[in-house]
Length: 80
Length: 527
Image (cartoon, each protein chain N blue to C red):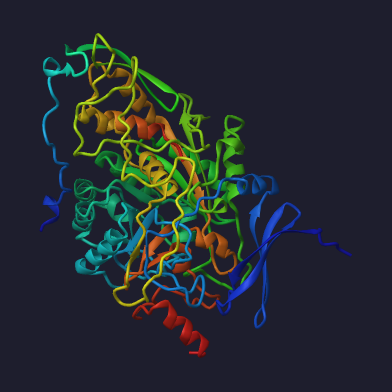
């Protein structure tokens, strides 16, 4: 193997994140809507826009977000 | 007439004789404001050297919570006692956090100070041997950090392939311990390392002028250091400056090193100070060996900043013995001054465990109650420990050491070590803001990640030599080395040398590694 073509195995992606129009709250049987929510971790609060149920307030966090940007924020907040 | 200040007994431990390396009782004592490790060898006399200067911080560091955990895997039995039986042995009290792979014994300079006693000639580990080491670590079952070390690892043209093999084996943080010469001269080589998955360069960086490098490394290296850092920035690799601090050589440069780090952020992510330890190669073991201790480095950093940071912004490591290290994270303001970064605390006084969703988990979730969204709380690897407890499984029987040591596994991972790994990886690799594109609606996350560019890590680790070795500390060590015969040995034991340069564990040039028990038996026989 030459040095130019070595790279770590890419993380497998099972599926693309679902579109907002495809998301339904299982408990309320209501379509999710984009809305302001407050994400909190270790005392920090972040106002962000995420799909949420207009009826019960449940929030959808995609796997992509949970394992990506949100995880990086969490890791940055953690301390030794 | 002079009077020696009164001595205060602080505790008993064990150490080794610097002459014969036999294990002997030792005592920690305070003399004035200095903590000494004192010991006597029946054959070679008494020794007392400073290990900590500052009783206030000694008490503070000593009150830190102690984390212990049985190694995930052990490969040697307890036969001759610590530090002779390293493998790890069942009496070791902490798991691996970072493991060094010494991929070559060659180096492109011959530093007057070198813990590995590396020469310009030497040998490389084969790829098959390196695969074997990775297998040993994988048998341990945990995702340790891997540091490529040596010798100078960049002497190898196939280093990118080694990095790729480590990443393909599932290890998710790889750092390169380097003097920076080749990565300064060959940015394309560094790009290949980055593409292969290198996260961080752990850069030998003793000062900001050539005079320091001429004394400690035998060459003018400052221009190359600056170029290496610039190349790391361009390649998207985090850079940690690693000064070896030697009294009378560069201890007055601690503030200048800090200023340099600030000026070269975000390519520079941290400074990791290492007080000089007298093992491996150094000029004269019979001369007085000057020492600087961790609190003196902290004091120099605080004094340099002139009041914006304080002692309580630094804390001991929570996975290793507290007297082995310090760390702190600081926000650098627009004027280049350090401001303390408040540490997040959980109910236990230590940060809450990270949470992440396994790749196989369903992607629909996110009930956080009300309008607060939190990360889904599926624990990584599901450690069987409570948030307030530290894993300490019962000791299992371990197999005898051999060329292919028997592995006895524990299924319980140390949450303290896992947290230490996350802390290091989070601070030392390239900041996420440079790799995560902005996302509409998630501006608050983006703004927060952008602030991480301006967070500087300041830490220090005190390695132990034959004079300062405290076996209580060594048993808690979580920085390990894989030996050629696939044992896992605490760093300070691996590098331990007697006053005449004789190593306890590391094979000398041209010498085949021996199991620790064989070395001990030969020593006993006077060979």
